[in-house]
Amino acid sequence: MIYNPAALARIRRLEVRGGLAQIRIENTTTYERGRYPGFTSIRSTGQRDLNKTHLDGLSVAIPAPTYRGSLVAAFGVHRVKNFDRAFRQELIDEKSAEEYIDENIVETESGGIWAWTGGVASEISPKMAVGAALLVYTGTAEYGSEYFKQWNYYAPDVGDTVYGEISEFDAVSSDHIGVSGTFGLTYQASPNLNIGAVIETPSFWNVKETSTAEGYEFYDTVMAESSWEWTIDDPRSIEYNMRHPFSFGLGFGYSYEQLNLALDLKYTDWSEFEYTDGFSQDLNSVIQDNYGEALELRVGAEYILPGPGVSLRAGFFRDPLPFPSEYVDQDRQYFTFGVGFLVDRVMTVDLAAVIGGYTLQYLDPRPYTEEYKTRRVFLTFGYRM
Image (cartoon, rainbow, N blue to C red):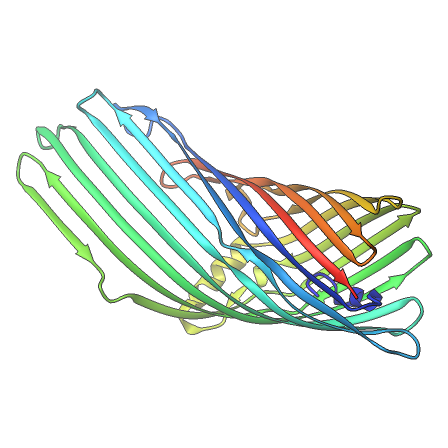
């Protein structure tokens, strides 16, 4: 249903599947030293980890009796995007124990997007199957950040030591709803080679965001001492609409005895992403100028041990970030490993791991890099009646 609904046509028995996923994110943020003239950078690296466990998906496929060929309907819900993210910045610059600048930021994001999906597929010839799926997306993202800065140093412009503190907390909650469609086909080119093709229609989204903020500031100079607090009691709310572009996929599967090989390509032109409401129209020209084409590459292999009913799997995929290239130090790339068990010919148990990450680089206002390492573990159960 998610990758190519035409493959549903091969299911011959009623099948129920469900699984769990655990994700670990490790963030390391490193700033360049020498941030302030006359100060020595004592600390420039911040680290933060995040662990989350959640339901990954539930689905059922129902074959209908046919005179020839096949007709299969399927329904399910799958977590197709994680908003889970962790970030920490820790900076300390000193002239001496009494003169310093200390700056910290901690960010946390959680939530995800669920795809509620219905699909249908049919074999229209002995070698070809077609399928379609409708996907309705719902989800929520929760973002929170804590910012703290403290400084104490001699300032020549005021002729005295100045001291200050700033602390701020921001929270943003956003509700997402969207819809898209997928059309696919599979073709058996030879007894060993299968070809698949997929078109994903643009997805249309509505997002509602609510944000709050509170903070505190304190300044002590030779001239005066002052402080104030602020809180936004009434949450600020905005709503906007957006459209994701078409995506096109092409895949090849080759089987020889107990060995299965797979290659998948997916093309998306992210410069066609656009906001479709008046509120955000001014961002579309920025997207068109800075975002570009992306080609996902996925390769995998599976070897089946028929005696014990065990499948061994490994793979690699590269999923380019749709950001301007000057911000990407290392693109998203992951290695995958898995093992599957067939239990009593009616039940499958699959365990998989995904390991990899990416690195972003920024030049303004101070150069720094954000490195993210990800480990995801999936445990999935299937039952065939």
